[in-house]
Image 1 (cartoon, one colour):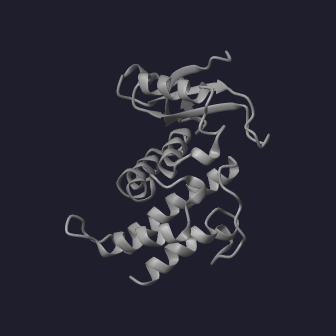
Image 2: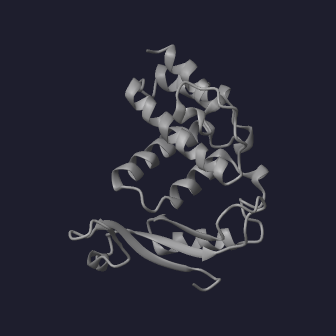
Image 3: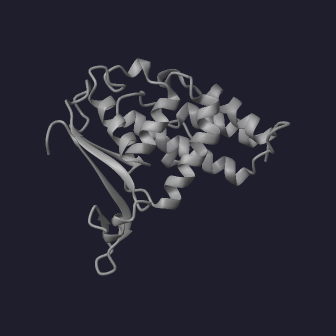
Length: 209
C-alpha cells in the first residue's frame, strides 16, 4: 500500500458459498448507489505506541468525503496526535466512520443515535472531560421529552446507551480516554469505558422506569 493511502468502494455483501464478505470484489459495486467509500493508509504509531500503524475507515457516502477524511488523518495535526483537543462529537463521527465491517442495520442505528441524540447533547464536550453527570443529564432530557420531542422509550434509551458504551470503549483502546475503575453492574460494563458514564445513564434511566 502506498504511504499516501488509497480510496476505494466496498460493501457488506457476503458470498453465498463461503459466507465471507465480498468487500471490494462485489459485482454490484458497478451500481453507483451500492456500498460506501473507504480509505486505507499507513500512519506513524500514536504516542502510546500501541495503536496499529495501518488505518482503515469507511462508511463515507462519496469519494470526496473519503478523500477529505484521509487528508485530515494525514495532516500534521491529527486528532489522535493531540487527544486533549478531541471533542466527544468528533470522536463519535470518527469512530463510526472506522467501523467498516458493521452490518448495515447496526451502522444505521449507531449513526441515528449519534446524529439525533449523542452529538447534540455531548458533541461539544472534550472527550477527556466527558463525565457521568453529562450522560445523566442527557438521558434525563431524552426520557422526559420536550415541547418539540416526544419522550423516548426505555428500549430506545438502552440502545443509545449501548452505542455510547461501545464508542467509549474504542476511545480507551485508542488512548483518548483513561481506563476507569471497574465499578459497574455487569461484567461487560466493568471491562469497558462505561464506569462513571454508565452509572450516569443508570441514574437517569432508573428514575423513568
